[in-house]
Image 1: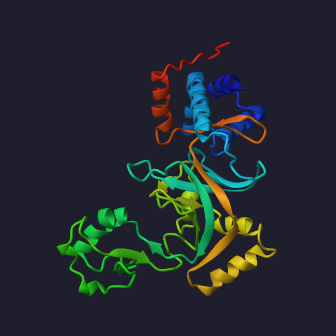
Image 2: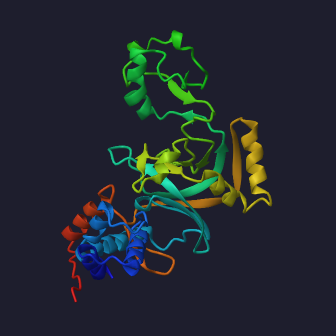
Image 3: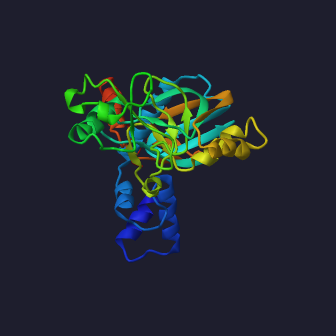
Length: 314
C-alpha cells in the first residue's frame, strides 16, 4: 500500500481510493486523518523499513522488561508516544481519551513505570512542585512579591503566609522555605479532578483548563504529569465499577466546590509505557514518533549487545 500511495502523491492521480488509503495510513500513524499529504504525513511515508523494524525490535525488548506479570483485568494504559490514555477491561478498550504528556526537555519528560491507582481528588488544589517553584516562580517573586497572584504562599504546615511577611530576595533556590499552592478554582492548573497513584515521581493523571492543546497532533506540553482530554468521562468509567450512578457520585463532590477524595473500591493498575510500534485491536501494527529519543538510545544499546537487523527487502 505504501508504494502505491507514494506513487500517487508524486503524480496527478489522487482519487478516492488513494484518499482512503492515505487516511488509513494517517490513522495507523496517529496523524490527523484528513487525507491531505501534508508535512507530517510525507515524513511518515518516508520512514524506511529499517526504521520501522527498529521500532518493532525495541518494542519487543520493552515487553521483555515488563515480564509475564498480569497487567490487570482492568487497567489504565498510557502509551506516551500515542498521546492517548485508555481504560482496558479484559483486553478490550472500554474508554480512551487524548492525553498531554511531559515536554521533551530535561526533568520534564514523563517517566515509564507501573503503579496502582487508589483514588481521585475532586476540586483539587495544586501544590506547586519544588522544581517549578525555585526555577520559575521564585525569580518572579523576588522581582515583585505580588507576582503569580493566583498562588498562595504556604509554610511547612500548609498554613497561608501573607506575602508582605516574606522577603523573597533574602532566599536562594536552595534556602527558600515556603511552598506555593493554588486553591480549587475554574482556572486551577489541575482542572477539576486528578487521579492518584502515589509514586516516587509525583506523577498523576489530571484535568486541565488548557483544552486547546488536545487539538495538536504532538501533545508534549506538561511538566511530566498526564493531562486528560475527557477527565469527567474517565472518572465516570472508573466509578462505574462501584456505583450504579457514577455521574451522580462525581457531580455531588464537584458541586460542593470543596477539595475531596473519592476512593476506588478496587485499585486499578496504571501502566505509563513508551511504545513506538504497537498492534491495534485487529493486530495491525501502528507506528509513532520517538518523541523523547528513548528508542534510539535503546536500539544503540541493543546494537552494542550484538543485535543485528535483517530486514526483508523482497
